[in-house]
Picture (tube, one colour):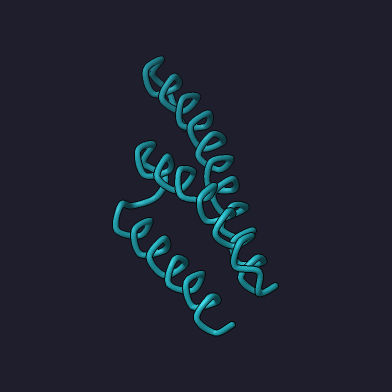
Length: 90
């Protein structure tokens, strides 16, 4: 339990950051889910549009420290390959 004024303040700050980071992670996952759903539907145009809207969200998560840079790059790379594969398959 926090005793000193400084540790009490850090506890309050950590609580706020946790809430904000949770919202950011949720927002990123929502955008990624929309891309996944568009890929599953087989509509390349919708999937490409969803990917274009998801990319800035994921990169924003990187700059805010919610997602690691390599994790974001890996996710975007795999999704873009899958979106391209829709066009090749059809």
